[in-house]
Length: 269
Figure 1 (cartoon, rainbow, N blue to C red):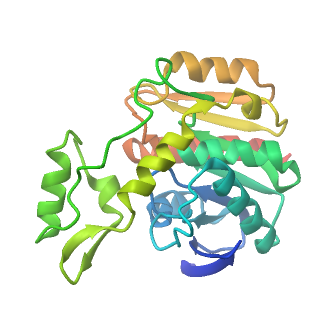
Figure 2 (figure 1 turned 120 degrees about the horizontal axis):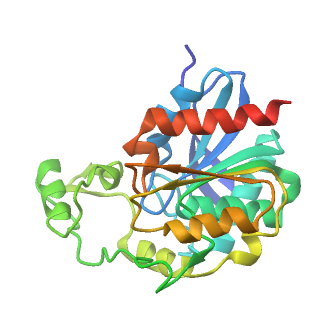
C-alpha cells in the first residue's frame, strides 16, 4: 500500500500545496473546483490505483496554498497548473478537473497542448453565464467567519441554503478564536466572478481525447450544454450519470471511478 505524500511546492512565486497519492501507475493531475481541497480526491485515487497515480494540486487561494496577490483569475490558475506539471517532469499528463478545475483543465490543454495527453472534465462548462448557466456564483459573503464548534459551523452554512456542507467543511480548521474555513470569502467571490464567461473557444481548441462527465441532476451544468460540448468537440466522450448532481464523484464514487477508469483504458492502446 502506497502512502500519500503532502508537499508545498514553489510555483510562480507561491507555495502551492499538493498531495501525491503515490504508486507507479500512469500519472493523473487532479484539479478541484471552487472551495475545494486536494485531499477530497483520496477516494478516487484509491479507486484508480494501482494502475493510475493521482497527484492533486491545491490551487492558489484554496486550502493550504498561498493566495498571493489575490489574483484568482483563470489565467493565474492555468499558468500555475502548467508550471506545476513542468516541475513534476511527468508530462504530457492526463488532467482531470472538477467544475472550475475542469475549465482550468481544458484551458491548460488549449494553451499548453504539449503538457496534456488527455482530459477528464467533470461538470466544467464551456459557457458559464446566465441564463445558460443558472447559478454561476454562490454568495458566501455572509458566511460565518468563526464559530465555537465545527458542528455550529456546519449548521450556519447549511442554514444559508446549502443542503450538505460536507464539501465546504473539507476546508474547516480550528483557529485560536474558533472554527473557520481556510479560504478567503472575498477571494472566492472574485474567483467565481472571474469564471463567468464564454469558454467555447478553448474547449474546442484542443484535440486530445476527452471524457466529459455530467451529473444529470446538476444545478450548475445544464444537460443541453453538456451534450453540445460533446457534439461540437471531436474526440470527446460524454457520460451522463443518473442520480448525480454537480459533485458526481461524491454522489456515486464507484460509478464515477468506473466511468473514468473505462475511459482511461481506451488510452492504453
